[in-house]
Image (cartoon, rainbow, N blue to C red; front, side, top):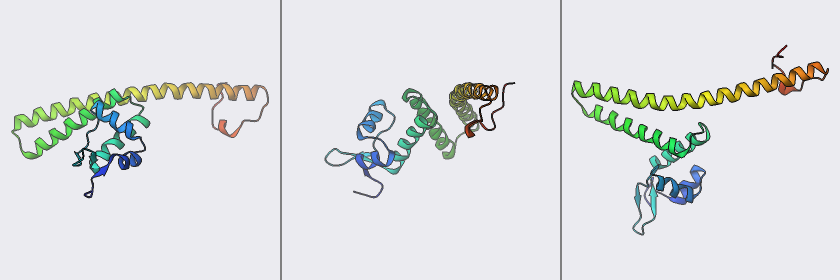
Length: 156
């Protein structure tokens, strides 16, 4: 096996997923192996592993579902294509078109992230309100505040 060409089990282990998950990602079009062995086994490059890790990050950190991740990855792929086209040299008119398309792709992805942040902000506000109720209860009943509530402002 050449350097940078990994079997599915190795990639799955490094990405913290199962081989079944990798096959599912492939079925959904989120990732494709860079090649296959003579026997037909999937082979992944380091760039494939990076993409799988990106999928996991978008799931675990950002909370995106696989459909949303597909849209984000498609936008990122298109942005990479536009960057390469620009680097290869294009007319001034095409540069403007590339900039417009890139800005639109960025804005769509940013809107998805902002929507997630809004949901998280609402959840955080609910938790803060609950913590304030606990503080108020503790103060009202002369109960010492647990360390987890230190710094929480009483609503009174």
